[in-house]
Image (cartoon, rainbow, N blue to C red; front, side):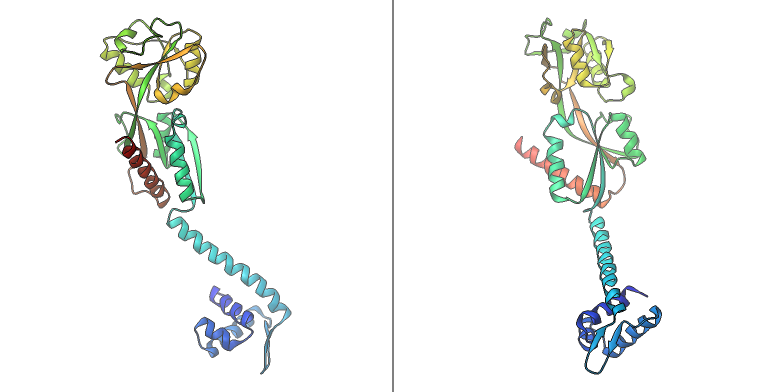
Length: 303
């Protein structure tokens, strides 16, 4: 039994006429009659009662028609699902992102635009540090990652594309000696106690901090480590030191904490998109197209 046999049967059952069914199927009536007879022989039962005047379904034929319609509908859905997958319109897309990104409008705008265009795609978003995202993208656990990275030391199989820069801010206690300044240079922070991420976290923030300090002629004195930026800001509020954070996080308002601009030329972190260096799947290609359109729109707004 093949799907075409079921289509032949459905046509005859719905038309109750071999002549009309043959016309509907664009085949001759004798071949259609032979195919139905072969189907009945294979099933070992009679599907139609035939007289010179009419064709009627037997009780078995009526029941078989119900199942036939279900089978053909499922087959049609399977074909359409395959086409949707080939067009990148269905499936699961796994996306990694750095913790500061949800505090911007950028990622929510991209996600919303993509979901509007591809509503049947399931988006799985995972907050991860830079090192974890790189490992997950390389291992195929993520299709794409939004991470903080300078591009140095990236595996050759990984494609990193910088898409924006975020200025760095200095979080200080409200009673800090520099708290009333509009901006500071890193050279003014030589004697400060720094609160930062542990090196093992692999956040992409350790290198910019050290580079800024070394450019100012000193090694930063780290007195506290915390894996979450919100924890670092809380420790600043407790008066334990200062913290350098990406500017999107300055929207986190904690009593007793102020955010200062850094005047140094290198006081920024890049946001990069990480994918495997291979042709993207249709699913990923659709997301990248949405991402590019949002980047272009942002560039147009900013001149």
